[in-house]
Length: 419
Image (spheres, one colour):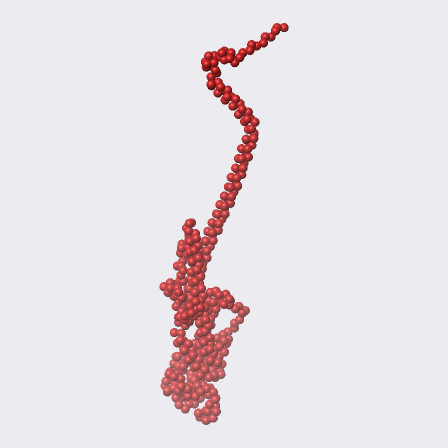
């Protein structure tokens, strides 16, 4: 077996001597070799550390990215919720604004309709008859159809605004001017509230005046002794359930007040129409000068007690005699103690008689109006001198004509005070 020789021992100095001469400078290795060795060692260390720690670093980066992603998603959800709330709120505000404008336009149209109705009161002749005592305007003044208290007479409509479109134009705010738009709406609402309240005050004043006037008319006509309600109904069949109007003091609204005013005006019209049908006029010209009253008296011929069924009025022979109410002539002829007699049927059981006439100016069947001439005064029949025997009858029974003449004077005074 061959013998193995041991390797010769070479020192570093010998190794350096054996290197090529361009790798060794002055018996020392070149610097780039040293640097390369250090770099290799560093790279090897880093690679070793990366291999050992890369799983931990990757896990840390993944956790961090997951946290950021979740954070972004939560933030996006919050922003979306805020955006939805803002959009919803804006939509609600917009819808609310539009609804308020629509309500204002409707209220204005309602107020304009009320004002038109108020103007019709004057067209129906109530402007000169009714006086306003409005709670909002305590001074008494004539009703002017072209104005409602502080509303200008030049405005046919109660302002606040000429039309509903101007409400929308005036109230519509810009995107950056919403508070100001809401302030405009509030101002418009206040103006409409003021106009509505003033109209209610006017209607209340007119209603009170109308009720006072109706009361005076009923008192005046009631002095005739007639059952006024029965006379006004004309004995016409009527009925139905009682549905009272809402109490104006409780409702405090225009509608119930207007309805009650309409009912009062209708009642005034009925009473005035009845007054025109009643014999309230004067049968002779000038002042009424009775020479003999209605009822029991001393008969001018027998000088004994007797019933006088009419009223003797002084009248010169040939003076005109006039109908005291409209009606139809039923008698125009010589009739016993009446002498020449004209009888007029006024309807509803009412009739008047004109006796002792010297001549006729009408014939049976003629239609006459109040104040129309029916004959001339004289002394025909059972008479002691020229005068007019005037009778009023209800359902064929004579009643005192003086009551109707007195009621006629009251009605005339009512008409004069409202002109």
